[in-house]
Image (cartoon, rainbow, N blue to C red; front, side, top):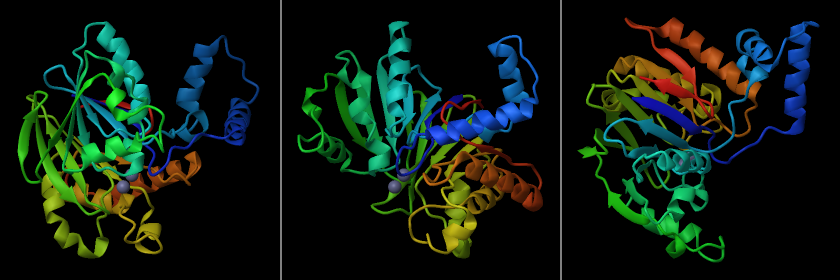
Length: 320
Ligand SMILES: [Zn+2]
Ligand SMILES: [Zn+2]
């Protein structure tokens, strides 16, 4: 199973402003200390090995879209945030090389940051493409049609050429879709959200659980979540806020913290956690700091087996 992150930001897409790029370049030049490099790839090795991630790269700014490569050769995609535009460009290239034109989407929920990429999803205009939108919500079709009404967008949903189908899934059930087992969990969020557990025939499992509020004072009530995460190879979890933010001014905003996610993954015996759905106000430095604090917290609270804590960024690819 391979997992590729096409969009990792929460709530609204962000781009690095010129001043942020300027700071990264200035820091890199200082860190290089007058060293010279033979060519770009030589300099690239320096960036990869001697600069921290927030200086040498960026977590990115597209909203939720994750691709899971597993199963029967159809595409498996979680959510249609702005990252789905880039995924669509990549998919076009792969379809030209013979990839099957079947897209199995799994929707966490229908908030704007999770559907806003669909009007820019190129394969929706491909008459040979088949798009199946799986969702725990019965109003998924209504949400996608509404955002392409004339008042909001110039291209109507009915002008799309792909064959588009909608399938409602039920929480607590396990389905066989795209050659993988898909388990569905209902989550706490405004208008509800759903988590998905994907398991391939090699027994590898990845959890997609975003836009879900887990409250630290009701952790006993989270036993069902820990069961859903049980021994997962990867848990992609909503960690939008630091714990201090999550329990003070942003309680009941429908999101979770890095600390609660680590506690749940420890409880579940999960192997890897990807911090995800980054707060749009946070800079690359802020997100990197939260990642480092998360690693320290994991080490302090570790039980038998270590939990690897990753921080998702646009373009990250993982092999499970
Ligand atoms: Zn969201
Ligand atoms: Zn949401």
